[in-house]
Image (cartoon, rainbow, N blue to C red; front, side, top):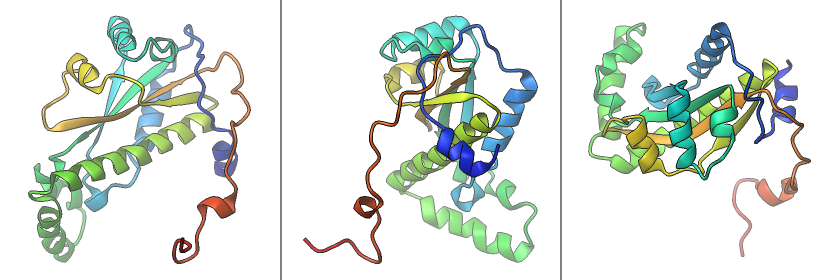
Length: 203
């Protein structure tokens, strides 16, 4: 599917066919594409938890306002991030770069994140958001529908998936076959209301 068309057709859907399953090659393709999403300093700190256990899906649904897409979607992806990925063998992220680039980037990574928890978290949310959009557009291009989600108890889900202490959950993306078309868009703001040139208008 054309990229622009995928963007235009992507909608959040709530009702998925619970009998449908993605093939393993399809899952691998989706995750491989999401892993091409950009991250600052190429630290690739997103972590994708693919929830396949039906019982675990039910438990997650109980702490997600009983939303049906948690259990009925073909694939439930929990997008998490390792807040301390920048500390963990950062040379891995630039092993194919020239030595001069490595010599510059590795200290820069430390300088950017060291003792800056808010920066770590902000970067994690940005990166997971970009990866989620890549995942949703890739799914649409493959003929599937998606639902991005943050309507759940983050702490409870963290316990259920045994989230490491230095990780955070950003969001869910449910992927599958929609049972019915999405509703018409609720109302798009006018471009002039959201786009500014150079500066915001003075009040």
